[in-house]
Length: 221
Image (cartoon, rainbow, N blue to C red; front, side, top):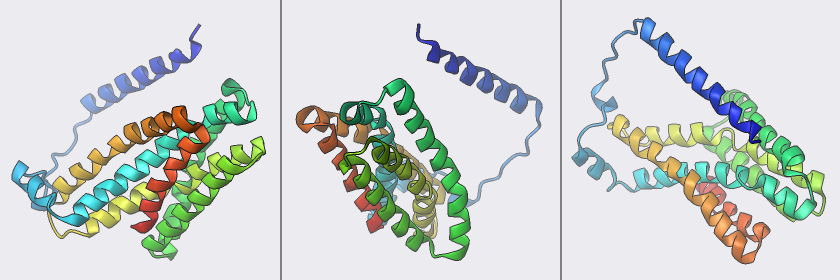
């Protein structure tokens, strides 16, 4: 009776439609500039000797880890500490988290026209920490609910700002650097795991406190 599995048939259909559309459209050939090419393994090794490359890699790691470290455990937290139904309030909280993360991107685009990107990143990462603290420490289920979805909203600008700051920190090898940055999405697999392990040991509230570490790293950028 896993009716939710039907959503994967929708994903499969969308993927097939995309393949058909791409197949019938003649796309222009893209000529990469020299700094856009991935380059050799020696280029990768050379880049990894640059401390800014490593730090921005962990910036992406921290962002995706934050995103997944919160979203993966919202429903369980609301169930354990506030008795909310994972299939009702829990599911709604997660979907609202992703909705606000998407909508927040549009607000972020506007703010980046008016404010320095580093200042936007500081404000939003600090607001995400306050929102997460509110969700974890309040005794009210609804305040926790809105605290969690608020984290999604404030996380919305982080990926694009961190990525652009990273690329602007180097004059060349942007293609190879982009590949290194994209590898940072492994944070989305590691941080939720750490939260879960800590949650088993000290309770989920304590486990989710770990997310403040990647958020603090993003703030430091």
